[in-house]
Length: 339
Image 1 (cartoon, rainbow, N blue to C red):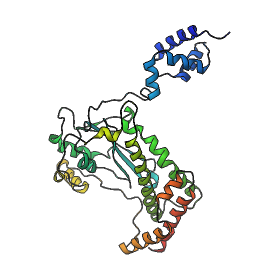
Image 2 (tube, rainbow, N blue to C red):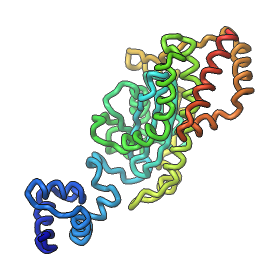
Image 3 (tube, one colour):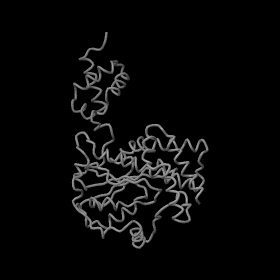
Image 4 (tube, helix red, strand yellow):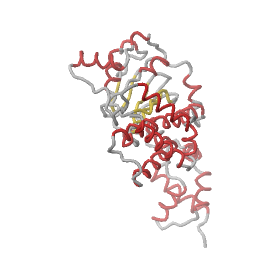
């Protein structure tokens, strides 16, 4: 004879008391089975929905399926989190994202050749200066730290530190979007590249090949990231709202352009004031062109074959990798003929 509903509910109350609100029907089923109590998953789910309504709603919206958020942002411009992803670094591409802690709007993105530091100048010029910049313990944002500290008196909120480094395991909002980037942008392109390497159609120890791979792959990643970020900023976050709407007019404090030097000038200023230098870039493949005319000739010849490279990305994410691979091989051979 099966477990009576009243008995099942009593057992679930005990289980929730012991495990907390994050356990859904599958986890509760396993937990009860460990205790020798057996019931169908659908019955457990029904009981969970009728009891502890707030717990069920939180699980449904995903509010408790992630680690606790280590900070709360009270308004647009309060705090911003910056991070980079190097899943495609072996092919010369690194992604950089910045997300406002309040609106969850992605404010800055790049697919770029590997850099050892990045600046958030474009975002600050467009939206204003944030009260606090939060990053992990890497060295790639030292210049951002420096500029944030240099402009600290221009911040709206003077009661918090201008920047803060915390462990990447603290589960900031920017780290939650990386799985979307990996699955929707990186994975199909990386799959194609690994196939080319495995089939010995490209040799990544060749400087010219590395240059071509990073160049075309970076452009396609930019297309994919733009699509993803625009969709993210326009989608509704349950219980929160639309990032674009929440961001409003940007940060409370704006910064005039003359106070924000470009990256190279900012790096020089960093060296003068800190007594140490920053590596402004690292080369992934050497530019093989001796003149701009040679480079332009290759670009034009490649464009005759592939006038719209966004189609390469669209087909790749739909599991048609051949056009991207063929285009890359075409770029490599065209470059080899013209250098």
